Length: 224
Ligand code: DC
Image 1 (cartoon, rainbow, N blue to C red):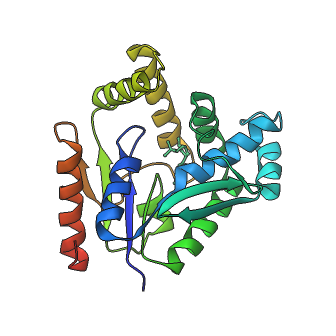
Image 2: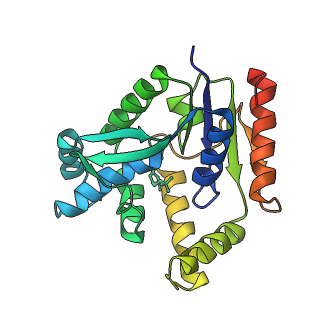
């Protein structure tokens, strides 16, 4: 059985960067499942389809060729062979990813693909339904969160570094709207799995969060 670690949490909890750092320390791969929903959202938008149109989005999902490749340990997300890793990071794609991920047929396909990847190698997987669905049987689950204000503050500062000066209030409102949609959808909403360990990073440095997660992993797998 490969070593599989599940990390779930709301928008801006730092899942991706923390998961990258933890996976590097453990020398295992990190699968960012949000990138797969984002790649589908990009395809939906490029096709001129409304992300809220379930039938049209599911048709796109049936056609879409989304793949994940690793180069020097880094995930690259491909859409019909094109590396879309960078262009799926816009605000428009974020909102569209949250909407397309509501549709059950979309989720079924993504979950199957993610479970197939998890069977191939040791992996740390982050997303919204990893502990509850994708790796429901994993003995190692973490729910990573922080207050909405702190998550928005971090996102706002990251944006500034990238030259994006969207006001803090807008960042907070968008984050809350996306969380609300991800937590209230009918199929596999974001929630903490009963057997997940809660890590509240509001008052922690990234290094402290990485150490806390490594300790949780060590308690389960005896390795850090
Ligand atoms: O983690 P992220 O912000 O890149 O994810 C983008 C959207 O994709 C998120 O708002 C909800 C959806 N998502 C999901 O439904 N299930 C996952 N396992 C990962 C992401």
